[in-house]
Image (tube, rainbow, N blue to C red; front, side, top):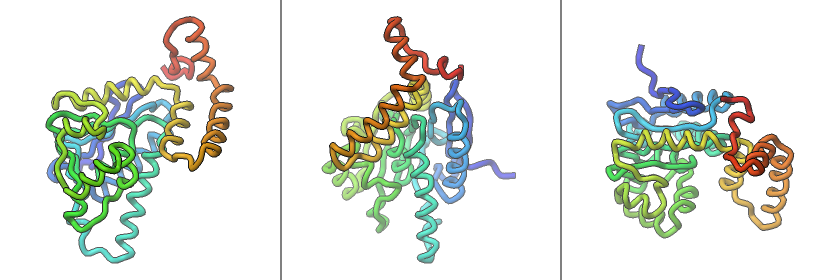
Length: 263
């Protein structure tokens, strides 16, 4: 029986971790990886004890990107089905109710960069190498990157990186905002787990509503204020605000896990 191409474990309380497990292919993402990531994510989203997620790869490598040989020889119908399969995972990840942290160890190319950009925090090291090989392959960036990359680094940086095909080092990635946290290479995964553990203590209802609005920006101030009012009414009447207010009054840190009885 072959090993699963996605491993799942619990490296910290309330934190799940998904690891791409194709070391012989430098964790390249093919159909089976996408499918297992999708199914594991669906399972985790239904588990209320999971309050944060780390995504990474085995062997100190995040991923060499999409499995290019598997993209050749497709019919139009198969090419469309491939993109639709990718987009199921994109939507699940972007809309996840909990924070998603990517451990960008070693090589991070193409598809997996798009995956990371759909999350909430990216951790890397000086040895991280971020690559965007799409145009060299005669392809457009996918996994939502023509939206998510400019939002992170600005249109100028995004255009330069995508058209040049240059490899972006960990230090350069942090300078332009592509990485949120830069640590030594041997600490990337541990730092990602620590960051996810911090995120796990956030108020889940308030966070998920904030995340949705940051990901789907309002078209006008009128629309944004309407969405703001809707969200804040729910939050003002919820248990999270009760705990936040009690902590404020008692001059202590809020404990949203205790309030939900998830300790």
